[in-house]
Image (cartoon, rainbow, N blue to C red; front, top):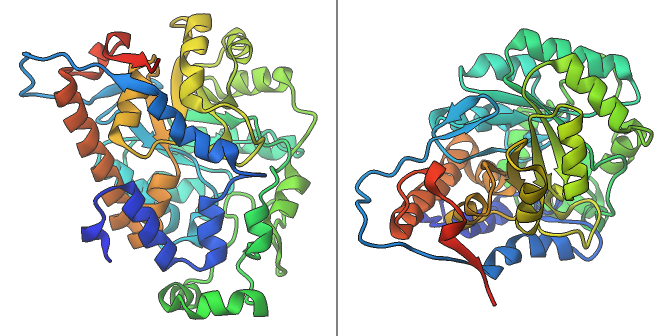
Length: 383
């Protein structure tokens, strides 16, 4: 099975499973606790039905979307995901170049394995940097300065990881950063020789954006979640978020909000947008699916915020449903990581292409020719 045989995101997931050693695949694929939220984030889309409108001229479908002060060719973009080097040696650069090819935005994680400057220089396309307010506030300020100098269009503050969720799959499968060859993991690495060979040829697994300031990994192997817990700050409040909004002074996203009350606070501190997200079901289990949060939040904030839906998207119809419910755009994480693991930049391009073609086809069949016209008249909740 190769990329050419992958007809949907589910197929890409199966191919990624074959290509990756168990620790890496389950790091992408897993959630927290019983993984209820992980599954619900996708299943919830089935609670909504699309209402097509026929006898319309659908010869031309316009998928362009304005978000964060820029116009994208697609109504979805690549979400920030950490440590892409774990999945393929083309890492963040492969994903960024794929996004640029399709005229959409790429988001870089603080915990990336490529520096923000190198990513910025790799394409001329729009980029967003995902940031945390760390215990080292000086490092947070430094990120703001570096992003301004490198030309990032937007900043995205993740607020739902003040400590790590209970990701049991990572413990079961021996997930560490960088990968550690142990008796427990050896068989999985041996049975995935291409990944293992590329690890030997391209062994640089450093957290490129913090390596110069914090010896996050050093020369030893530490549990990934141990590092996360050691760096994140449980004292961060809305006052800190307001400070960062002012420090940045441009399009600003708060990622991880799920309630109307928090969305209202985001408006009050001057955020441009929120990313409705449960962190891919990897933090607090039994939180709602992002798609179920759209209407209540939109009713609360009106047009004062742009809403980005992040989580559970596996089909073009999922994107269309989110937009019809009131989202301005969607972001995808696992779908493009499955592609990256399956074939590097070409795999990410395949993932984006699959979803883009699905969205275009779905819009045509729905009888809606442009994203701006995609309203609640095209959708209903199942009774």
